[in-house]
Image 1 (tube, rainbow, N blue to C red):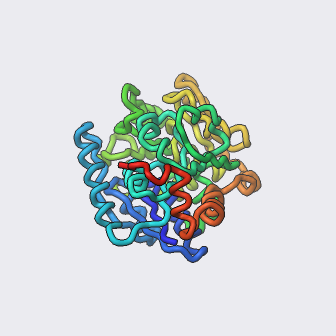
Image 2 (tube, one colour; image 1 turned 135 degrees about the horizontal axis):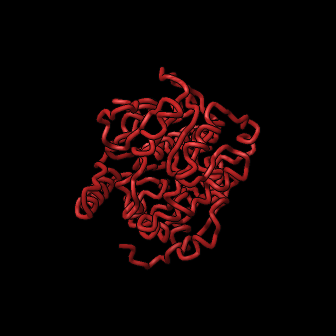
Image 3 (tube, rainbow, N blue to C red; image 1 turned 90 degrees about the vertical axis):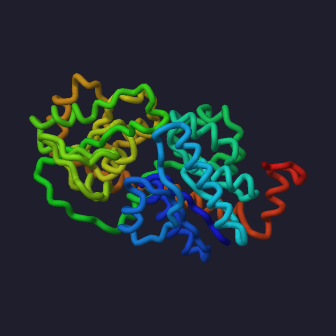
Amino acid sequence: MKVWYDAGTGKQVRYGYAIAEKVRTLGHEVILTTRKHPDTIPLAKLLDEKFIEIGKYEPSSLMARMKQSVYRQSKFLKLFKKDQPDVAISHQSVDLCRVAFGLGIPIIATHDSPHARAVNKLTMNLIDWLVVSEAIRIDLLSCYTIKHVFPFKGVDEVAWIQDKHYQIEYEYPRPLIIVREFETKAVYAQGKRNLTETIAKKLNKVGHVLYLPRYDRRPREKLIVPQDFVDSTSLVNQADLVIGVGGTMGREAALQGIPTIVLPTFRNQPVNDYLAKKGFPIFKIELNQLINQSKRLINKRWKVKALLEKLENPVNTIQEILQEKIHPVNRKKMETLRNGSKEHRN
């Protein structure tokens, strides 16, 4: 069986890598695609994994986004003109979902962002199997016509933290506070204030602050700003405190026992709340509590190995779907059940 995974961000490259490793042990062929993005290509090189680079992240305008999306989809069609994948997997890649649906390729997707409404509208109704943390209530997905939902007892980041088999050592002064910049260019970020750089500078009184920007790596006064790509899972493991708006890096830190503070940019973050209830050190605070809470949490480390082992790996759920729900000989039958044999899909 031929499996296609498309990654649009660094997180998705990690996810694709973890899935590819598992799928290959089952004897299947894997095709990995990505786009030019600050973290995608450098991370693929670090992991020593071959991703086919198609298109780039271009958030400068709605027109630019659409042009890149159409470009990537046309390139995918050329890539698969003679030999199509048997299944497509992604973390809700819009371009993968549109092409796979149009070609009648079954789609497996992961999901952890109920607030990403634009992406959800463009992908959810095309997905056959949605693999999602049990932290996300089913009623949050009820407005979409997803065919099958597979909850798992964990979070996406377990896929590459639970079986992490490498560690890059960085030489930064201690105590080290890492502040991750808010993803300002995402559609869901429109209208949200980016206070992360201002907050980073205020934290100098607590420790050495490493500010990790999304796109602009110019030096900042009184802050450590890496000029080259750094591996986030290794970096946060060496931190004494991690601060962000509650995204991937914060969960990577908490899963490794590093105290993490989530800033109040997004009020509804069920995945982070889920980890906190499980005993992982991830804390929501108000801005006026930041300095005091940072002083309280810095230099502490939680023992989370046993907690981490109890969480389910979503890659295992994907494996089960591949083995039990998808098989090349059943593909035509599945397509008929899914859409009706005479439906015009484009």
